[in-house]
Length: 330
Figure 1 (cartoon, rainbow, N blue to C red):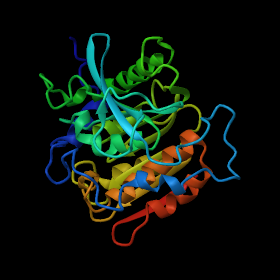
Figure 2 (figure 1 turned 90 degrees about the horizontal axis):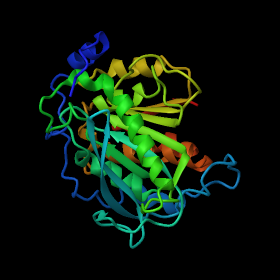
Figure 3 (figure 1 turned 90 degrees about the vertical axis):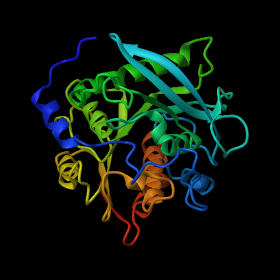
């Protein structure tokens, strides 16, 4: 399987992310660890219904779920030009909300936006289940590929292959959306191809930004960049982007995220985790996790479901004294 030589951009990213590991005990929490009582963002959905004044576009889904949903999980064997992309999919399921995702559980009624979530160097989709399952419970189908040369088990491992990952993520979008019209697939009729978002942490944040640059994937209508930066200037239609970054990040400097934020004129928001590093705030019992999770969930509810009330909550979601601050230019 050929590996593209390092480009100047890929080399810079490799150096910037050297030592980035999703298994860092500072932030990696067991995905089965429950969130502290009262801090799970999806428990707030009952009071997060769309405002009567909201005016969703004609192609928008009927409305975001009014309460948290059960979550199912399955795996897909995907690939692109010989590049293996095993993908874990979390989705809204029938049954009682809460608890661990159930393998191959029946899909909940309705159509749901798609979110592709990308892992960091030496990461795996399972490392981010504390995020992905909560997004699924909030009404999103979340597809998380393991990238062939940067995942934990990659052999050989090649951080410079990040430059190929935006195209991998686009292929995952194509393949998962195809299930909406595949007669034998459980997701048939449950995916909303008009509403697609991407997100990711560290190298996955760069990957998500890369989808909006260079060979732009025009299907992507929103992006979340966690502890990452840009892969070139954003191109195409204005697309809301949410940045999340610790202001003491030793791996991807805070200024890198700030430069990406200030360098775009698109609708944008920024959550700063005060005094925090490269991702310890992503653990479900960690300081700042609640603010990050609520902000990401409401950002996606606004951009994917046209939920105006969710947009109005964003500043409050991302702001807590001595924990986090939020700013935006929508």
